[in-house]
Image 1: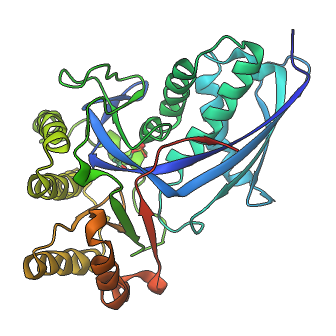
Image 2 (image 1 turned 30 degrees about the horizontal axis):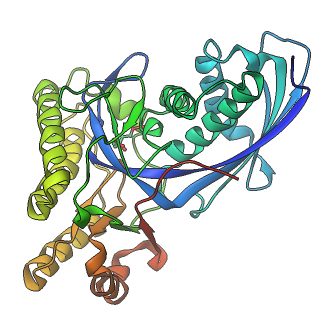
Length: 347
Ligand code: PMV
C-alpha cells in the first residue's frame, strides 16, 4: 500500500578524516580507504515532506535552506537524486519539500556536503522503511551510507560513529568501497570522546572544489604511491586506535593532512588551499606541543581551516591556548568546539 504523505526529520553530522580520501573513479569509488571521526556539534538538520504525486519521469522537489528557497543549491541536489533514483525508484512517486539548516555558520568553510547529503539519505531511507517495514536498522544505515556516497564520497562516513571506515581494506573487516562501516575493533580509552576545535581561518569560496581536486589525481605523478601510502596508513591507524599509541597517532594524522595538501601542490594545474594563518596555527601547535608535553595535533580538510585534535584530559589546557592565542589567527575570531559523535539522529 502506498503512503499518501509522510514527513521525516534527521540530524546528521559532519566528519573529519584522519586518513584522507583524495582520488576516485566512477561512480564515487575511492582510490584508497579512509577513516574519520564523526563529529557531534557540526551537523545538518533536514526535514523532508513527501507528498504523493502523479508518477513522473523527473524528480520533483523544492529546497529551503535556513528558511529561504535556495535555487543555487538545487542543481547539486537534483544531480544527487538522479544518481540515487535507480536505487530508490519511489522518489518519482512523490513531490519532496526539503527544509535544511546547519548548526555551523553558513559558508564558514566547513564542508556541509557530508552532513547535508547524509541527512537527505536518511530521510529517503525513512520513507523506504514506511513502504517496507521489514527493513532492519543495519540495512537502513548501510543503504543510507551507500546513497550518501553517491552525492559526496565523504558523506558515506556521516551516518554512524564514532569512527567510520570507507573503502575496501583487507585489515578492516566488513569494509567496502560502496558504503562506510563503523570501525569494527575496540578503541583504546585515550581516543574516547576526542576533542576537535575547528579554527575558521578562511570562509571564502575555495579556489578549487573537491570534485576538481579528486579529478586532478588522475594524471598525478605521485598518485599511485599516495594510494598505497594511504592504505598502509589505514592499517597503521587501525593498530594505533586499538593500542592507544597517541604519539604515533599525532604523527600519522599530521602527516596525512600535509600529504593531502602536498597532492594539491603537486597537481597540474597546482593549487594552494592553505592560507598564511593556516601555517601560523600549525607552527603554534608544534611549539605548544613541544613546550607542554602535549598530544595536541592538527588536521586539515580541503580548505584553510584547521581542525585541532586533542584528548579529553587536555581539554581545559588546550581550550585556554585556543582562546588566548590561536583565536587571533581565526577569521573574525571564529572557532567551533566539537567532539566525536555517534552519527545520524532521528528528530
Ligand atoms: O567528499 P568529497 O568529495 O568532498 O571529498 C572530501 C575529501 C577530503 O575532505 C579532503 C578528505 C576526506 O576524506 O574527507
